[in-house]
Length: 479
Image (cartoon, rainbow, N blue to C red; front, side, top):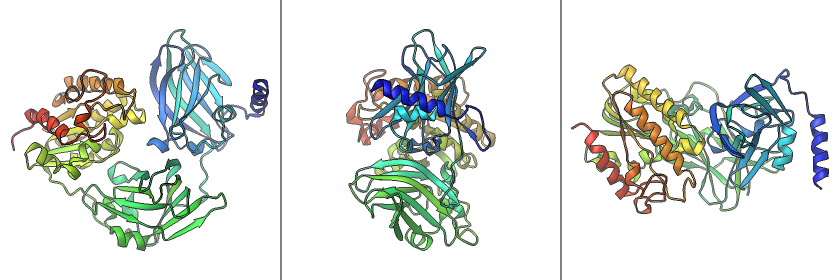
């Protein structure tokens, strides 16, 4: 059987197209930087796909394309791997089809046929992460670039904009299958363009009536509403297409689309549901909402920006004013966001006149595979953007908290390394103060957190937020 598989692979490789850029092909850079490892079968660089909050769409992986990995190290001593978190799949291509050298730089090529054989499927839409690493213990290997070479996706829907394409799966009732941030809060979809006649499209697999669409705002419009589809059609491939029309979602959610922050697909069943695509179709006429979309927050005082650890006090603990015993705090937190989305929306805070801005973010950067250097660069870009308009603003950089073993298993060392990078950045940047909350939430460096301070192993409970408040208060000005 092994010889038979090898023969098939050789035949497929012989039939593969020449590894050269052809007309109509595009290069998609998945990773660019320096990720160094020293050791046999060590993982160096990981890139999340759109299924896991990244930007690379795994539906791009088609039979006439290929990957290249640029690195320094031993010839042919790299592997390419694909991970599907839902099924626990880890498939690695251990030997490239070709490897060229230019000085100290090696370029390893992995054909799509090689990837098919190892992954066991020609449909890569469920891939959550693409990784590269070293196959040798002889010296160190530094991954510098991971690139996909292939044809751009063809839109067979005629949609105005495809908001998501991949494969996101859950098997729980009323569960969030996939969310899309709008341009207003760091995403790419400009919800302010919505006009009468607009429609949203969700393509999915599972039972016929298995999904609904949720509209939500963190910035001051209607907080959340669910919208059932106007029409569900079965497609030739056995999947379903749900259509959501303007009259329905405008009646349910409202028309303050400039402050629509998030679109989410939820399930109506405990059966397995997979969302493959979310798309937007524009209607006719001018946009319905002509407001500027500004957050309904005070312009002065103390601002908090970050992820769910920053946002959650709004819903559960009376917000930061209650936690800190103040009345001048404004919360700009959004659950699930990394420093990438926070950076994209920092102009909202820069245009105001805050005395202090508190950053509570970074754990989702680790979850998405961003390097500590990338995360610190985003923090620095936010500080720079604010100072350009508000030079007297001071900044507090709260450490990333540890988690229990239910979250970020085996990632505690990365949390500690990011905190060290935060501390170093603050020590050399005027007006930025690093506050160590990490040490109060776990018994020691690299260990899991005390569970009694968390609701679920990741998000602090009331006692946990009280600890954070006690640590922050010495660095906050009097009202």
